[in-house]
Image 1 (cartoon, rainbow, N blue to C red):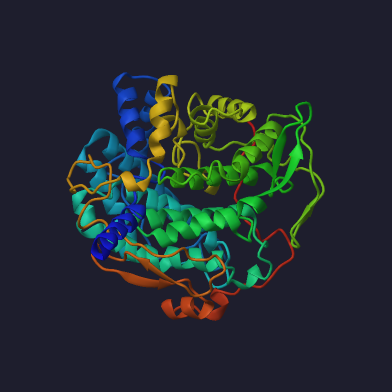
Image 2 (cartoon, rainbow, N blue to C red):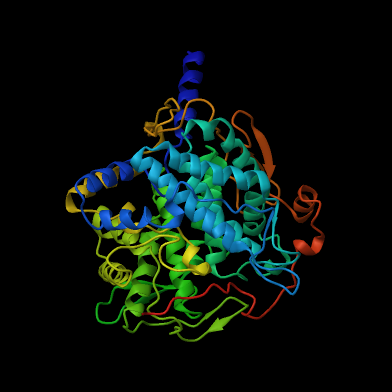
Length: 502
């Protein structure tokens, strides 16, 4: 009897912590739908696809720009070079999509070359004491991992490149993601020092890497921070106030950055969409968490940016204070509204009138479909997310039921053999994935062991780093590389450009 119980328990634990692959921003259900639409040459899928396959980032002869150190900020002695990473992340994702949809190995090989090159070369970010490195580790971190997830079952990458990539990511991106989210940097003397987008992108990076490496501890860490985080990435701080909509009396959510400007507030919803979709594809519904708080905020943002008034509760976090909603970059847009409307308005079937209208506005403004990174302009803000919402998420009525099954829980997944052609709907059985089961890591933890896959077949331990841990892992860094001078001004926050209404 005891042996039977132990066997049943093993099965329960094993299936509970299995992950579905591909299972980040793109699922196998999405790929199947896209193939069908392209076969029928239907828009907006066809126009989106034509754009993706025409830009330089979608070509198999794309040349990577990997470097040893990425600088987001320029100084008198250093030239910023972060656009090299922005461009390569956009290309790796576009090429990965081409392989998943077309099945031509040249595109998987091109994506693998990019990711492996960065795995071999990247050592660190920015100069000493520069907080902007945490934008790079979050924004480009989640983008690179999403690209890797697409080619996870491409045999040549799974056999060698994946281990190189994950080892690099673990010691560079992930270490800094966790250091930042644990409020270990000197500038985080106030845990709400940084605007929401800073934490959201690092949460997205941790979550994505957890899925790629089948690490439930990392995945749960990001989910837990979303639900209960003390910084502005926690959903109850990100959507800081609930207010009553004029005319309707409905409750809508005032975003934390609404008093700052609308460009960065829009980035919050782009990143909230990333977090929610990555979690949804693993059976975790962050979209619906806390009375669909993401939607409450999206409705507020969309209403205001469509030139309607909104209530505003005075906001302060001890660093900045706002007494009114900002009209700076009002009407700005980012390619995320196809995703938000498809989920809330179609899959969930809930009332989302402003989200729908803003989706239509964004699609119209962008030329009939939501583009993606590398297709709709230059500058950092155009590469803050991967986009391609019209291709990936647009739904006809007959697509809704199937799209709603994207959240098939991980317990339904089974292993499959790695092949040179992408046909897998779950984790490869051998070289690409190792399953882990471990307890949720508390967001307050300063040094908690996290098992991660640093290679195809080994289990390595990573520690949520203290300052000394990061310094010892990166001997070239001094203490000032980790601890920046606290500031009470807004000027040192994220300087991503915002997008004005055309």
